[in-house]
Structures are given as structure tokens and as C-alpha cells.
Image (spheres, protein in one colour):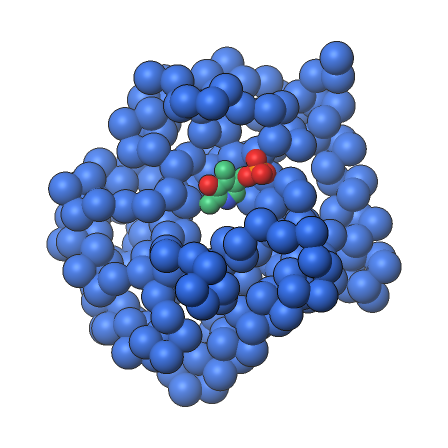
Length: 234
Ligand SMILES: *Cc1c(COP(=O)(O)O)cnc(C)c1O
């Protein structure tokens, strides 16, 4: 079975191919390795292979890994899962990025709880691009109001948008979901007059389509670490 280092190489090669095919510059897409359910040792192995950005979905599990790996310089931790208001403090204290903001209340708590000594917490707003087929993410019609609220908060830096389209074999449907996020980002950028450089979209199964549509960051778990056990490891 290929190891993590080989998988990373293969994923980077796929990203390269997708960038070239869609006429984008090489290295214009950032790779986030989604290490949820995998032990700190797996993160260390990916780190040794040159990977620096890691994504976690579960607060407790993520914080344990952040703390276990503090001796590795330049690690960048992204929280990408659903976030409840009673868990915001741990995320504000331990992560560099949060991709899954879909309510102002969560952003307000993160802003209050982010230590002023730390750099601002980078945040993306998660948008529901799938309508009734999905429950998470802010509805496109509520995005502008949420973004205005977030931009006004201290200690947060609004970087862009994130989406998780419903799983689909239909390439055209997927492409239209990704294009919607790009359009919403473009509109929002004009309305707010702030740069929103991050489009967090694409996972193991759909990263090529996401890159073709304009993704700047793909979140890849399975293709790097392998299939996950059914339940999160505790
Ligand atoms: C698990 C997860 C990923 C990675 O999914 P894979 O299919 O394993 O690549 C990406 N983004 C989010 C929000 C996730 O929860």
C-alpha cells in the first residue's frame, strides 16, 4: 500500500494537471490535508513530506493534535467542521483558520475569544450552494449581511468563501455549484471592497472540477491518508 508521502505526491500531481488543463498558473491552488480521524503520527508523516496546512473537523480531536505537535514549526491548522457556540473558545485559542462560519453569533464569539496577542483568526464563510440538498452554510441571499457583520469584528480576518456541494456524479451540476461560489465571491468583493482571495472548494472526489472552476484551496483527506474508519477516533 502506498504511504502518505507517495499519496501527497500523487495529489500534488493531480492538482498540477488540473491547473494546467484549465489554463491556471502552477501552484495557484493550495493543498489542505484533512487529517480528521487520523492520529498525530499521520500528520507528522505528511509534515516530513513537506505538507504544512492541515484541516480538522472535530474540536476536541483537533486540539489534541495541535497540542501534541507544537514542536513542529510552521504548521497551519484549519478548522473546517461544524462549530457549536460552546466549542468556539478552543478553536479561537488553537487554530489559525476557520472555514465553516455560517452564523454571526459564532463569529462574534470567536472574535471575543481570540487572544489579542495572537495574529487575527483567518475566516471563510461557508455558503450553501446546494439549496435544499444541503443544510449547512449560509444561504446565498443572507451572505452579504453575514459578511458585513464579520468584517466589522475585531481579531478576525475575512479571507473568502467555502462550500461543500452535495455529492454528485453529475459533473455539470458540480461545476455549477462551484461557479456559484465564485460568482458570490466576486459580488461580495465588489460590495465590501475588500480582497477575498480564498475559495475553499474541492475534496478528494471533486478537486479537478473545483480547480477548473477557480478553487484556490482544496481540502483533501481520503486521497492523502486513505479511507476513514466509520466513526471518528476518540
Ligand atoms: C472530510 C472533509 C474533507 C475531506 O474529504 P475527503 O473526501 O476525504 O477528501 C473536506 N472538507 C470537509 C469540510 C470535510 O469534512
